[in-house]
Figure (tube, rainbow, N blue to C red):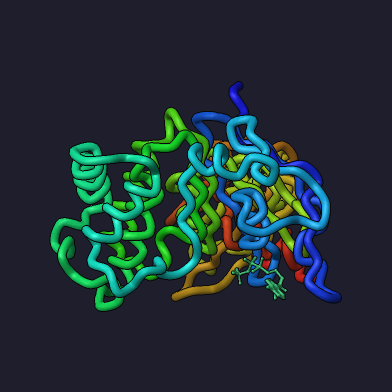
Amino acid sequence: MTVLIEAVGLHKRFGDIKAVNGISLKVAKGEVLGFLGPNGAGKSTTMKMITGFLEPDAGLASICGIDVFKEPKNAKAKFGYVPEGAPSYGEMTTRAFLSFIAEIRGYRGAAIVSRVANAVERAGLGPVLDQVIDTLSKGYKRRVGLAQAILHDPPVLIMDEPTDGLDPNQKHHVRNLITDMAADKAIIISTHILEEVEAVCSRAVVINKGVIVADGTADDLLQRMHYHGAVSLKVVADRADAAIRALTNAAAIASVETLGKPNGHLLLRAIPHQKTMTAAEVAAVLRAQNIPVDELYVERGRLDDVFRKITMPEEGDSNA
Ligand code: ATP
């Protein structure tokens, strides 16, 4: 495992607010880390410290083993950063801005032209190459921000809400781009969009009030819901009592919950003792009693619910 991004004990306080309170993490080559948390959790502050744009009160950050505070110039050559919002230099055209960034990155002559052309193609900016950035739609501004970050093909990418403001087609395009680049880079994406975590991230870190409260794959997080692996089913209302009795008496089932009563049916959720019960086993329990089942599926849980459970534990399992 080649660790390309490392943060150790980052702290940052703004007056009385402890924005970041001891965050440590490592991201290896090939990983796409989703950085999640409610508003004000400390995501942007952490990313600004990891990229050396904000000095921490305590802690270290390094990119490709280079300390971002001691050697900022060397570290900056190793990563691309998509900050929140629109790019600066809004009075420039897309082409002029990206050429300017290429020059800052040390390219000259034909190398500038080819770097810009490549970034423009990957970010899908062809139609707005000669348009002034301030006049672009929000989605295109985000894509200009993305293009400047990938222009030098860095081994590390750090993106603050990269798909914010994009329409569904653009989101799809950017997520594909991230997936295509993932194999030989370490990538951090901060996002509020939980479907994005499932779509592109190999790992998710949830922060709340400046500390890490969960770290794992989307599946690891989903397993935190008590109904992960449960089987939901729909039976006709007049067989409801018999169905509940049969399921409650089945050895593999720990409990049965009633979820609702739509259109003459009853929606039930059977929670297994072990998280390994199959839908077929549940169907067999009911078939043995001649109880017809209209719908049957294994629940994975929803990342939204996990997120709420982790960051607002007092609410508990919202769907229980
Ligand atoms: P969001 O999802 O809303 O963008 P976030 O997780 O990125 O939130 P941060 O922007 O890192 O959160 O903010 C963390 C906390 O620090 C918040 O309470 C915020 O108000 C505060 N904060 C951030 N920057 C500053 C600043 N420059 N001065 C004072 N307080 C700040």
